[in-house]
Length: 219
Image (tube, rainbow, N blue to C red):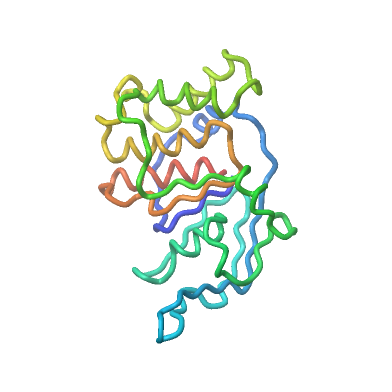
């Protein structure tokens, strides 16, 4: 799985082998590598012409790695993320390849997920209720009810949400909300997850915990 964000990486000492085994019931997906070359993006400025946001940016995101996009405020990190995720393509120039082939935006949207900075959680649902509903919607008949329950329980444990399992999302802490946002998208095991500023608003411990879990999921 490729998980992309724009914050520095950190690590926390945890029993990795045990945690990796927790997600063994997720649906299997093929690996996805993303390569982009000479990406440029500019916005019109009236009589001043155009303001260049990105100029000839190239890179490669390999499957199984957590990749960070770094840069100062206003450098175009979110713009690049939007282009790579396929949500801002009209004015962009350059090439994006998925596993060596030109990206098909419609197909790519089906295999990837984009977790934005502002979450869209339903305030009156508990963590478990939100996960069960998401599992029914995303997995459909792909898994049995028992298998879906196992997937939900594994993800909740993996993302350290067991204590908040019966808490409504409106009562969650900032770190718990971020982890739940990831958990909801992880249910059908998308090979690519994009995250825009996943640690914004979190304290140092919650940020380190969040990034560590993302690294573990990517592997």
